[in-house]
Length: 192
Image 1 (cartoon, helix red, strand yellow):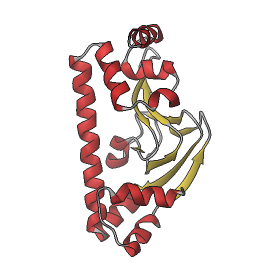
Image 2 (cartoon, one colour; image 1 turned 180 degrees about the vertical axis):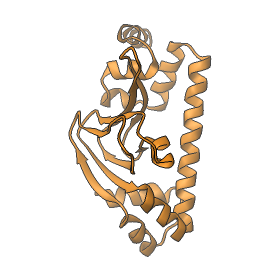
Image 3 (tube, one colour; image 1 turned 135 degrees about the vertical axis):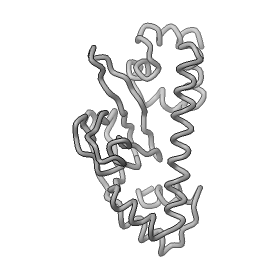
Image 4 (cartoon, helix red, strand yellow; image 1 turned 60 degrees about the vertical axis):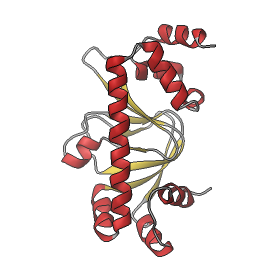
């Protein structure tokens, strides 16, 4: 299925755009391809776009002062990613986003998204709904980190996103959960 159709189906779950409105909406996107390991946004960059993943898998992360990787998000097909703080506040990126596998995305600039939201009420509704869903997911993840042990976080991740385990190397899943690779192996073996 081509990118245009994937985006159209994704939006149709939430918002109603006529064929003409969707064509106008889609005209603001650009298809981009990235190779495995390629950086999409680097810490310190100016951030002007957000990305809708058509295929592949990306990760958003930062490295702390001890050079330990902390993964904020994996982005699978039909998910969105960017450094939203930098995008919305027009500041430098504080995270890095790179490709776990070859990826094809649709990108839209902040300026184009704002323009389309002014022009199409349903587009504004869609982006607001998506932002709200992202906020809820981030809050749930934060609460899980504060309240649950590693085993519970692992089980939650497995239940919510089973496909992730086939797309993402285990050391990255461990970094996402905030555990060592060895701890992840123990959790994996105890859940069989």
